[in-house]
Length: 50
Image 1 (tube, rainbow, N blue to C red):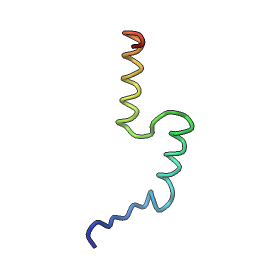
Image 2 (image 1 turned 135 degrees about the vertical axis):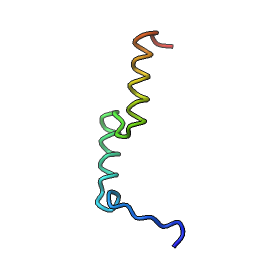
Image 3 (image 1 turned 120 degrees about the vertical axis):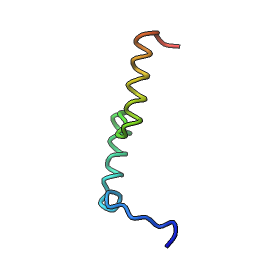
């Protein structure tokens, strides 16, 4: 079957729980999202707000 993939994390609901936590806390659960948020905070601390 082309285009069909199975994810056990999605099946168990782990993905949805992580998304809900990220929305409520404002802290991303993905590595790239977390790096982007930390980098943004560092730049704001160094150079101030735009």
